[in-house]
Every structure is written in C-alpha cells, then in structure tokens.
Length: 182
View (tube, rainbow, N blue to C red):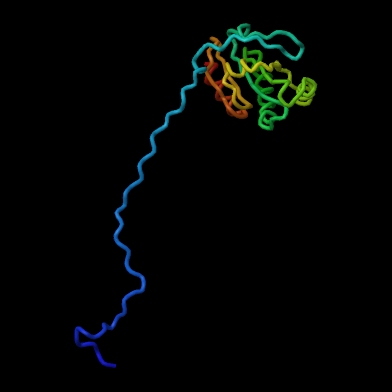
C-alpha cells in the first residue's frame, strides 16, 4: 500500500456518513406563572344560618349550635369515601359530643338513594350523630359543595374555619379538634 503524499490523493480516513449536527444553543423553558389557590369565600365568615330536617322530621337550625364546634358533613350512602369516614365521625361524636362538638351529616334523599336506604345505612353503621336530609340545591351552593364527601367545620363562634374535601380520617379529625378547641 502506498501512502498518500499529495493533496490530490484521497486521505487515509473516510468521512463519516453522518454529519456532525450544528451546535444548539440551550434556551431554558419559560417558567409557569405561580398560581395561588383561589380564596374560599366561605372561610373565616359566619356560617349560613340554615334550617335542616333530621331523619325524624325534626328541624335542626345551625344557630342552635352556637358555642359548639360543628362538623357539617355532606355525604351519600353510595359514596365509598363517605362510607370510609363514617366510623371516624362516629368516634368524634362518641369521644367529644359531651365537650360541645357536634356532627351533622347531610345527605340528599333524591340523589341515587332513598330515605329507606339512608335509614338502613344509619342502622348498619350504628350512627348516633344527627343525620339531616336536604335536596335543596341552594343549601349545597351556600356551602360550596361540588363533590362529596365534604365537611365544613364551624367554630364555637359560628365562623367557618375549615372546608375539608374528601374523606375525613382519624388524624384529620384530631388535627382539626386540636386546632379549634384551644
């Protein structure tokens, strides 16, 4: 083999069939705007004074619970997370009812359940706290109920302090009781 000595002869190495790409300048992505949570118009405001009806047909007026902490729970018999939270709500009622903490569970008898189904549910879960019935869309709108379960917690002064969306668990209830009962 002869070595390549002149400029017109082919070089010893062959060029790559894949050309080197042009250099790329890195441009960092534009940061997304910082989103702050939407203010909740219900929080830190007096709870709406509503009158409900319990399973026995007796009226329940929120104003009558002044001086107590009220866990106002919106639920349904067909809702799996609602079923999950019922023992914790019953435990709250059993342990703190004498301390001025009330559970009022509101459900709509016209939304996929009947009053008989609600009564059977109450019996099956051994619920002794207050269960109220309401199919009033204005009530659900007043409390901003877009999904269930949802619990609105009202302090002893009648001010809404918490809106908890999703199932309540023992640790949630403990934290809320500690925060509001001091």
